[in-house]
Amino acid sequence: MKKTLLLICFTILTNLCCLVINAQTVTFQYESKTPEGKHTITDSQQDLINILNRHQKVYMLEISMASKVSSLNKSTFIDKAVITNDGIVITTRLTTFNLNVVRSVNRIFVVDGFPYQSNGKTYVDYRTELDFSDGTGVYLGSFDKELMCSLVDDLYFIKTQTIAEANDKELARFNSVVEKYRELAAKPQPSEEQRKYIVQANAAAQTKDYKQAIDHYQQVLKISETSYPEAYFNLALLYGQESLFDNAILNMKKYLVLKPDASDARAA
Image 1 (cartoon, rainbow, N blue to C red):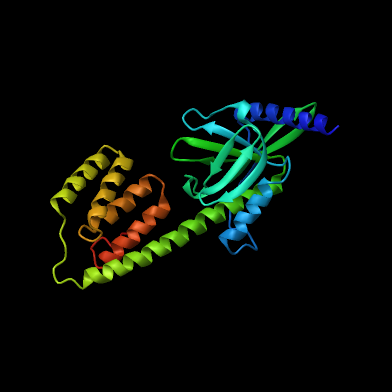
Image 2: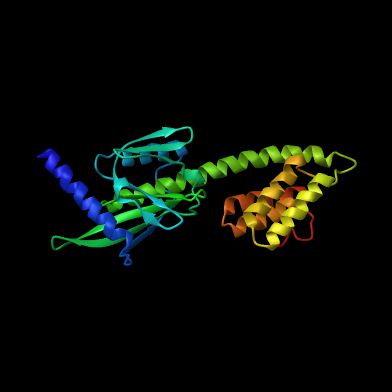
């Protein structure tokens, strides 16, 4: 009897995924928010693990970001999820996926509800999508609406709080660097090597190759964090173009720490 039920569930899930991939109608949508009653990243991580480890409740489906094509033979219920130093490792009977929420490109996490028909009855699949800059992606889904809403709230809290804490730590470190910079009678000027990267960054930005421009400006700052403050301002704009708003805000704060009286400080 148990095997029969599992077979029925998997058959429904497979048919569901086939229908959802091509579905155009969304009958339900929920945007993530800060969950109530959770005050630490650990709280949300544990809650997320508890949700993912509910037997036969949440499924995972890997996707190709290039074509948004899903492979049905990789779609199955989650067997186990564990917290690691690099995220959350999700295991199914067919695959293993390292879900690093912080590295996702999602600003918020959205649950979409997709209706489908089976045996004359209407069901709703609730699904959220996580995308990553390396071109990978994953769907997490369930028939349980409340469960999925709690799941995306946890994802949102983990990501925003982790980034906020890391940025606060980085800004504190940078402030100590700037204190030493202000004590210098002669402020450092950009080196020839830095000027080379600046020219390359500006050229890349002109062609809208923002990622390359970001890489060049980061090279400028590796050589010296204080000799070319405008690098932080330009990085803030470039990260904004890439929708990496947390990075944009951090770099704008660094710019204002270095040049609080700059003519463009008010605009920043």
